[in-house]
Image (cartoon, rainbow, N blue to C red; front, side, top):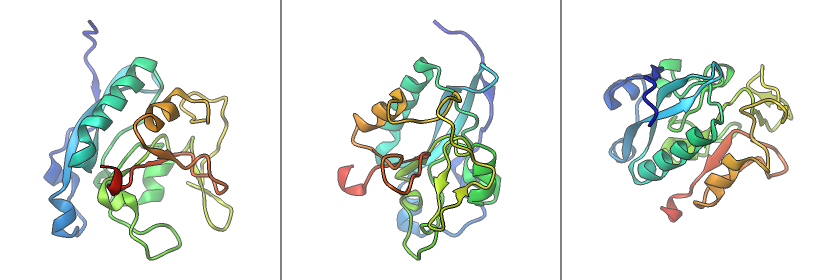
Length: 186
């Protein structure tokens, strides 16, 4: 049994994790916060948090237990309130997160992140391609040889796919960081 004490990267209450943004009550009532353990890039055990839809909390907890066993490195898992709800700021820090009440970049459509049903992992290493072709975050670089980078062959991609999640690294306009679960599949 592993007795290593984790380095705590985030220890917020749900109320603290949701401060600083107005969220419709029907969405707020479906959110929860979970603690997740992970190996970070210092090769030490860390504990962070994800704010997500209550119906996927157990499943995501199980996935991150498997990610931990794989020793797939996660830089941070810190709720978006710590980043003032700024996606670019969170992505530049290589943060892993779920809930962020916002629209899909370049549209007025509410994102699956707004429902707590989309996960972005190691966002600087796994950037997304914007509509104009630039990478987000601005300091993002996709290099499959770097640990923590997601690829079609990655065991982490398979862990999510086996549970009905869709990885957007397969589509033409790449979003290597992003996994989502539609509410219809909950």
